[in-house]
Image 1 (spheres, rainbow, N blue to C red):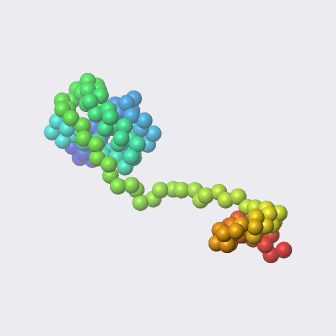
Image 2 (image 1 turned 45 degrees about the vertical axis):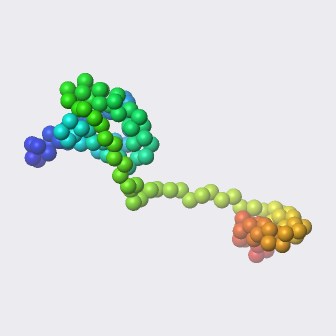
Image 3 (image 1 turned 45 degrees about the horizontal axis):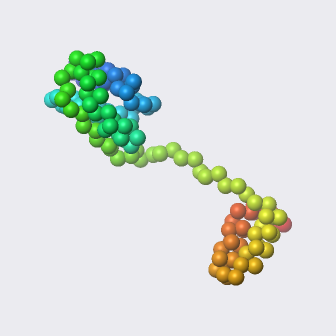
Length: 135
């Protein structure tokens, strides 16, 4: 490996480790620190981390200067676009019983506003288990 690249990687690891007590970095791979001249450029795709880092700029600068013997004069935070893949869980949908469907349709038929009544009826059918509708 190239010596300059190795030095940069070590520097990034040291900065990230020094930031750990100040910022809640649960995923270190979501923060990319770079030192350019006397400025620390802190890039992240985590909105919460970026916001907290903005409030702690002076403390970050002071801490890194003391622990890593740097001569930083300022800290800039850049929020990168969110990653393309964000794992999400599908919403948990509760299914209604046939008795609930009957009650909701009864209520829907008694509503004076026909559109609202039809909407409630469609909602009742949407949340009822399909196997119960066929019975």
